[in-house]
Length: 516
Image (tube, rainbow, N blue to C red):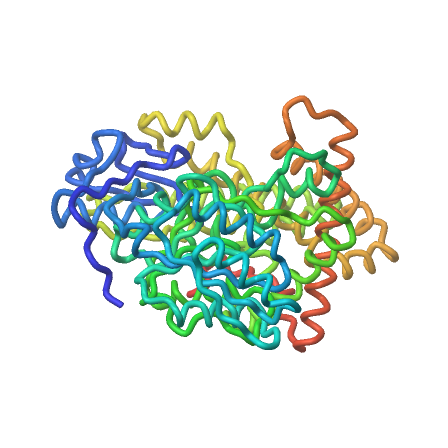
């Protein structure tokens, strides 16, 4: 589809983590990271704290910045709640359904409600709950799964926008208006809120505490475009807003897991923009029992194989540039010569990166982003959101002139750190059965696996810990984190075996994007 123009009055604001150097002529940010060099005319449009669309040129510049992820739209002028129908698939959960519908009516009283009863044992109970809240019920005589339920509900909707909500969520005030504001951009086909933990005020255990901090449904506090192999690569179907015209054929009913990721990527491949907006919040009741929680994590892991088949090169366990892959491998050899060689490879890569960052003779006048392969190769895909050096980020963000060598000296170690982060995550999550087998016969593999398990787990706790949390909390978090990874990895290997494919286990060492 051709990309429609942004409307006048549309506003975008730079991401606080975008580096603006050389007096604002060079922007570095987004995910995957990219370099944008702006002409003097473009810089003039960006003199203030935000960019407001007033003509075709500012609309193109705003589109560029938001697509690149270096700025985010403020939204506005979208559909109203009267243009929305909420679709809920449910089976045998009347109390949770009643809680959800009460929250929907309290936070978005103007929406329509369609509940698809997917083969409940006592359908009259579901009908009574829905009737209390003024909704419509459609019944499947036998259970066909949540994807089929969502598709059935979507076909019954007459509104231009559909909000899919699972029965175990509770939307918070303002969620719908915040999401609808993004649909003021006619190119946005799907927008999703942040999924946070639901709490009824009761005590937490180790599982619920970990899920509150680290749920795979919670994609973090920063807004982002949604695109494969980026910081926000997907959004869960637990709560998502979709334009009817973007929905297409809907969810794949033959995919019991990862069907939401598949839908998101198909909508994006059709040319629609997808947004993640954490200012809108929907609470989710996470599993509290250890066995049920582990089973769910393993279930998620089984979705990697069918996804890899449907969307090649979009779900590798690690995605590294050749130089970072070589450096990580050399460090993993754990020999003096290999460490020295890894340092030499990093120095050469830093020099090449600095050469690639040199400004051309004339500033770019095109408003299209230009990928810098050297920067992408240096930083790679940050599977677990490896943080940049904060001091360097603050210094670069001041807008002072920064030469290619200082920037390269920041970006290359950042990229290597991200690669090590990915490798540690893959050893303990995606590849742990193979790593465990290697540890049984190799002391070096055993040492690498132990260091990865402890260091990555502690670093994860530092990122997500509660204020004042102590050593016992750290130990419980690391244990839960490792259990999460073990369950997901087991499900991944089982799914790969069932589908007879190694694609979800194969690393991508090309340093290129998924569509290259």
